Length: 279
Ligand SMILES: NC(=O)c1ccc[n+]([C@@H]2O[C@H](COP(=O)([O-])OP(=O)(O)OC[C@H]3O[C@@H](n4cnc5c(N)ncnc54)[C@H](O)[C@@H]3O)[C@@H](O)[C@H]2O)c1
Image (cartoon, rainbow, N blue to C red; front, side):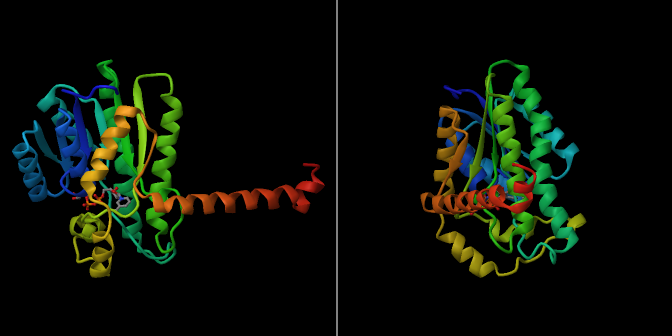
């Protein structure tokens, strides 16, 4: 998109962290902003914050893990602003622990919010963006955990790798049309994600105090300002940039993964079984 003035964005997880950063950046650029979030109080204060900044903003309570709720948020966006041009599938939560030991309800929670939430968002909003013919952009928040497999984060990594491949697939599918596609892979950003269990729905065991919250909050507190990430996402939309990375120091992790993949390829090309098959 070359001009976002007057265009409408819908952002999930818009009441906090990077989602709120995106809403502020989009609004400052003259966009109308609908934020969706599961936390009503935070949603209300985020909408108030945006309005105080002179931004044409509204909020809708949504649980991205619930397909009907996401489609309801799409209806609410059209009711409030008439059209939608930009979708940011950004809501997400973190789950840590070894894959084989992670409780089923936590596996289910992280898959439903981080993966199905993105899928529902695409299904509800992409047809609406395509319907008006003015073009638009779809951005989903993955993570560096969608590029490299950090230990003790198997369930989270699984969702973020899945989001990366869905967005990469869409980049190919929309190469020729006027829908831009991006994936955001943040490093450490100073948000409230360490206390994500505050929003765990009853069906996944309910809200509780997060484990290791002090250490995680301290680590996140040293991270990037989420408002900077919001500005980065706006810049990426305007320049139709597919990959958005927030931490230049993490480039080495991707290089190392690629080296390990190539080493695997080298081994495979020289292994006895393939040689026997004449390959
Ligand atoms: N903070 C980081 O260091 C970091 C790094 C990489 C990726 N991410 C990703 O960034 C995205 C944004 O997270 P953040 O760091 O800004 O955290 P945050 O907790 O500050 O914001 C996330 C928002 O999502 C909302 N949310 C949670 N579950 C929801 C649901 N079921 N339906 C609707 N809204 C829901 C929360 O209420 C919250 O407002 C997430 O997808 C996260 O995985 C964060």
